[in-house]
Length: 182
Image (tube, rainbow, N blue to C red; front, side, top):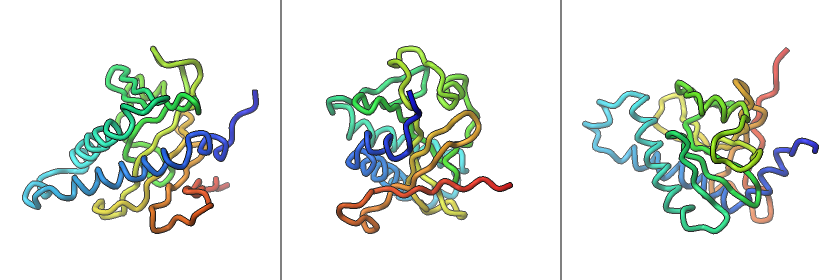
């Protein structure tokens, strides 16, 4: 069977769910930035990512847990959202501009990125990472995005457009995959 394209995969997920990922990431970062300034000054980038991740997971729970066709899997701490009709599994992460996550990868996270089987998951779902890219100061979200990791590289990365940048009838995402340099 031929490999699915970025357009095919994101179309299968659907605009409503892509928009939900964008809103979840922005809402989580807003909550984190809403902490008291005396607390924020004490937190390093690792704590910032952990707090934002916890808010993203809670936001995803609120949006997806009761929706038909969407299942949450927790594989030894790796939380994944399975969109059954698209046969896509999504994890939430802080990402770099190429759509890669930077945290120390656990075995199950490496298996996820390498598109390998994970215990309990249905057969061969496409694995994606959805999350956010911060600006250089680490204080603002530059964009929400969704990417397809393949091992240590990213096959593609798409920015999910915020509401004020969307045009009715057009895609809610744009390809931001960087071209390889020679």
